[in-house]
Image (cartoon, rainbow over all chains, first blue to last red; front, side, top):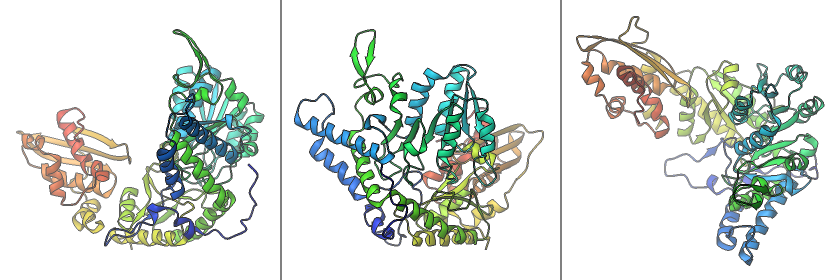
Length: 421
Length: 127
């Protein structure tokens, strides 16, 4: 991908972006507040362009891909592979063949754990993860480590929610086979220096997987600049359809791997008792894939590219800079994570007095503000920080300062309900 | 909706839970968690002549789960064990007098699940 200009030439017009999202511009039911959606870290809303791409595919191009000799199948295959090109350009892949369509980040990481992990991890090998990882970048490695007798170690996290890079260096001296970490913490928004972590891990001889679920949708993520071996991300968190996701892997690394799942499309020849494998990426796409969803992801990437990922990142940084001091003024507010727009994505996690996050989220919901409450699939991280649950608000391209104002006002309402102010 | 969910009785039971504490020894004791949100409830029961003579609970969780468990302990205190065994989720929800959404049902019913599991000696998924 050609790097975007560092400064957007036109101011980011979030109100205009918002108008592209049908779910956000719905008339609320009588007496109900309008929707303020602050849970994009879980799954984003979809612009009309993506919904129309899905609709158009099913109306005009639906047929199973590959091997069909009729024109409709060729059309469908062409659109599917065009989406792969868009994905490749978006993350700076050397070739579309490096991009495997999967259902989500979880599946992408499991693919690596099965195909790469079973081939390369042996008894006694060390796998380095982090305390801030999402369960989806912890559990697949736990399963692998148990199967192989490998060892897991986790880079610790400072009280303000950053990775302890001295601890990373100490673990790297033990020459791990794999280092896997999140580019951005889904729970705290911490923006990790992924290129630097990767540089150190590669210098120690490790293979590197970056969980890009919270970064690829929100900032320029270029695999050449990052220097990693694998990048996993979800389409549904970046304006694309549910059930779309991508594993990017270096061609030479993917080429050497055995399959993940067996079935149609991933073979070269099949005999009754043995088979040979198709080239990548087909080797990793057994069975009929989610064709329409991949095409929808392509439409989402075109939408984001038109906005410019530098502009997207700048918009979220500005919203966070607007939100943090306003949230900090609320009685009982404890902000978690770096609380620093430069080192934090558009995710803000907090606790409010002794009000349970589920109660906070329920009161916010009544005010029309959708946020997430709970452990955010990061139980070890919250336990490390002495917490059970937090309330989390996350921003995206369609959020505005008015949304932040509604969040702040609803949090004051929560304080009033619980008699704290 | 918030005014009805967080009505004064619920907030009162949350801030001043009835029968808070533990019993040692207890005839029945059981603890469980709601894996979704990490809420924890433990209930201890003493039974004399087939009746619940004393009940105490310890809990950590949201207002709905703590208040519901507090109200539940008031429902069972002094009642015959047979009647306690017969308490249904609808009985408890009726007592709470609040609209519980599907998302909060596990919070409202955690205490009852723990109580039943304690009495029957096994975990019951009272869905």
